[in-house]
Each structure stands twice: as C-alpha cells, then as structure tokens.
Length: 112
Length: 113
Image 1 (cartoon, chains in turn brown, green):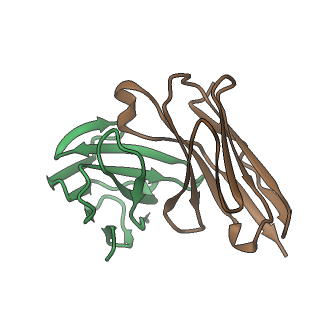
Image 2 (image 1 turned 90 degrees about the vertical axis):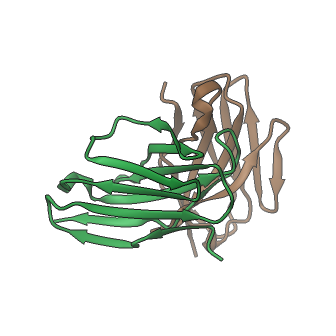
C-alpha cells in the first residue's frame, strides 16, 4: 500500500452539491493528519487538521477512521471557489515525523 | 508581511547552467524544507533542515545542494541543470521538526531549456 493514497479525480460537481474525498494511509501509528488545498499555480495551504473525534469548519467536515486507516473530507454546498486540488497529508511517527507525507491530491472542479 | 518567501519566482535557464533559489521565513520556525512538484503535480520532499542541521536528505541527485546559513534561510543550489529538473520548487517551514502546520512559499517555477 502506498504511504498516502487518494483518488486523483477529477471530481466535477455542480454548485451547491456535496462532495466527499477519501484518503488511506499505510502507517497505522501515524499521529497527525491534515487536509491541504492547492489552487492552480499556487502553493499548498492548510485547509484543516483532522482530529480523532472529527471536526468541522463551516462547510468542511473532516473525519478520521484509525481502524480502517482512512481520512475523509466532506464539502457541503460547494462553491465555485472550492475548485482546487485537495491534498491528504499524514505525519508518520518516529523519525518520519520530521516530514509530512503528501498524497498526490484529488482535483475538484465546481461547475456553475 | 510575507511568511515564507522565495526568489526568484520564475527561472528560465539553459541546460548545464548552475542556479540558486533562495528561501526566507519570518515566522521564527526551526525547520525548513525544500519540495519538488513535477508536471504530474506530485509534491516530493527533497531536504529538510532543523536549526541549520540537515535532518532529511531524500534521494536526489548530488547536483542539488541545500545550504542553511541560519534558521530563517534555506537556499537550494543546482549544478549542471538538466531538462528533468524543470518543475516547481517549494520552500516550506514548520515551527519544529515535530510541529504541525507547514507553511509553504509561493514556489519557484524552473524551466530548463
């Protein structure tokens, strides 16, 4: 299994739709999890951290399932401005915790 | 008040040349990184420094040499540039080596002709 695996998409959804992305990770001892967003020709930026109990930030909800080793991101009421690539990011344990491991990203296009 | 800045933003050069990219962060972070993002958009770590000490050195050609004069700066020097070096290079910083959020610079778009 790859360290961090995501469906590359693209996901093409109409405005107002709800869309969900999943991500799986290979190291069961990983401690920290994040979703980053990368707009076209821009740098990645933190969207939200993912906590064990799940967390919500406005229209965005992140969930962590440690037993199945997957992370999800739910976007409700999609806006045109949500169009971007969403990167699943995992912080492995031990010496590997020096670096974040990035997935290849899931591309979202929100269509008018 | 830019948090992580890189120069230059664009770099177009010929094969065989040597070039440098500079990165500075004003966040007071201890740890800085260099990433390469290729045409397939995969973000791959190259190097990391923690308090000027090299802590991550991934398998990259030794034509790439990082240098950290102080913990706020991490530069990347590339010798004998090749076509395959064309990519976007991102600098990033993090509060500590085990910290959470990583902040990225705007990227340097390198095109080798």
